[in-house]
Length: 124
Image (cartoon, rainbow, N blue to C red; front, side, top):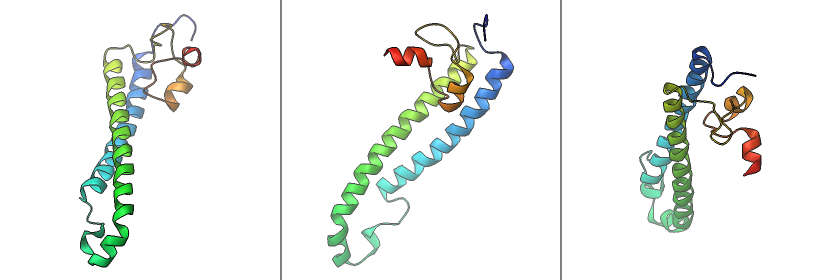
């Protein structure tokens, strides 16, 4: 890694495949969360008797709030992954925005949308 100021096209292609896989899964997870909020999956107290509706109303509200938070978090993750794809296209992917040095491959494999090296992250 010494002397390199960016990853090669082959390395960028490897990271792109990794990110596309994570992006596909993240979008599917987002749809699941979104459907649980809007009852798109049909698995709710809407199709049960009024007695059960009263008992489960509080739990359903809490579940919707949690699903909403998870959906927001998942959407943010999707946006970060899409931004990483843009950086790959610009050939700036894997460069620490603080130090300008390459972020280690191990870190990028674990957190493919990372914009900071471990050293820069620790200094924050």
